[in-house]
Image (cartoon, rainbow, N blue to C red):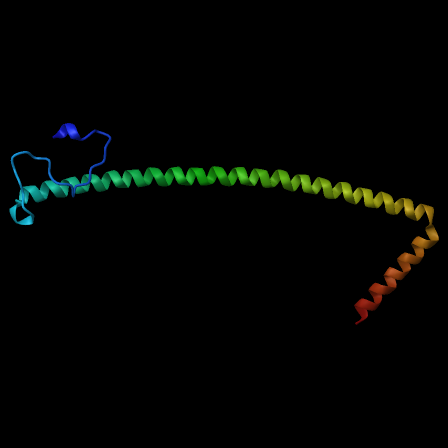
Length: 125
């Protein structure tokens, strides 16, 4: 009955024995040799499961690392784009303020004095 088992297949040791000619009616008819053979099959199954879980775990870790590095790269690109946008907006605002001060210097001075007075009131309390 070894033809039924493929080399790559996984068969649990709790499955009925495939030996022809011997019928077991439970644990009473089993010999110590049968139990030792079943224990050996269980150990083999456990070692295969351990190897499979190890390989699965390594694959999961590498996939998580890859996803994290891709996510970090995307976040870095988005962050750089946001910083560029902020710099551009700040430069535009600076240019607008400079133009407004050049066009109306007295008004700009009055606004600056008012803002300074307001901050003085806030910090005094």
